[in-house]
Length: 309
Image: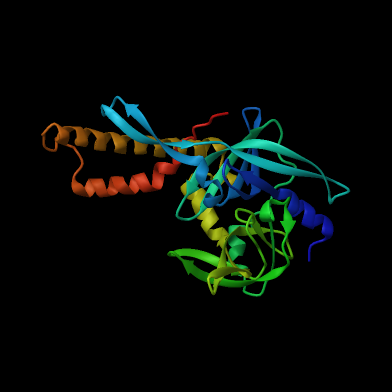
């Protein structure tokens, strides 16, 4: 069981409020690194918390001679809470963060905040090699900005299930009560304070003409999925000290370049077909187009956000 001081420093202080123009939820600070005399801090949250900050816009592209749809990512507001005497709220600090990666179907987003100093408290992710030791019945604690309040600890519960499937995605279930606003926050092991996932969904029971949320039957995105996404997005330096920021940035750039080449191949083919021509030598076949579609699905999230700040 965690000491009261550890509850604050390992869980409460690592939790932030995430707000967009139309919605809000929670987030968890999972890393901070120094780069070019600035600190880059990373926050995990649910995609549905920041959904309205991602939009589409029409933009003229001279390469294809027509308007194309582009993605625009607005910055989001991050609220940090400062306390005196450990538990008495003293003030809130508001920062801006960019959406640097996301998985909409998987309901996960990664935010990057640039500042002159690192956050004082950062959550500890359960190491990959310890995931296999998790068992049903282990004690859990959830923390999030429930109903828009400052970070609140939820009643302690247990790890109820390790093998739930929703829309063909892997979730874990907890009896630790959560409510609206906890989305994007953190689920932690009660004994160690280690971060193991993102509270995301509640079961709902039909009650006549209304529906009743069941906070003690909730689902959270498990940490194996989070590690896999950080790998897919080339942000391994967040959890692996042997991976550098520069190495990961280089791999992201290579994937961006491959995405650009894939789009250019499709643009050329579309233009030739529009002009009545056939498929030129070395142009994509249908099989190549199928591979290109996979590139578009897996790589579209690597584009840097469009920021209005």
